Image (tube, rainbow, N blue to C red; front, side, top):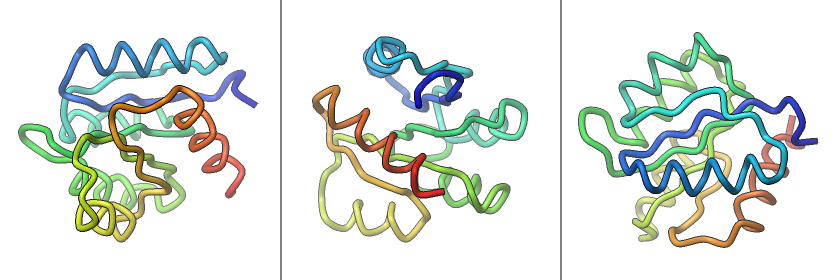
Length: 124
């Protein structure tokens, strides 16, 4: 499943991007890009056409909810998983309404990230 699955990691924390990259590469996912904010993610998405996007919420320039909406407007089939320390119900609701497949609260277990991605990819 993971082989040749392209992932775009979006997080303003270089450390968090590294953690997510390590978890995914351990499972055979291909990291096709990393973005530091939503604006970068929106610009990169059409170019790299990832199979899945992991998206932080709280970022400078363009936040994760806004970036999710923009990416979904570019590609309604985009699969986006929010990965955020902001686990309040209103953020989760906003993320799902914006089109996110799932919401993972930081810190998270590797298994949680992998199962979320696997479920999103299966959802067609």
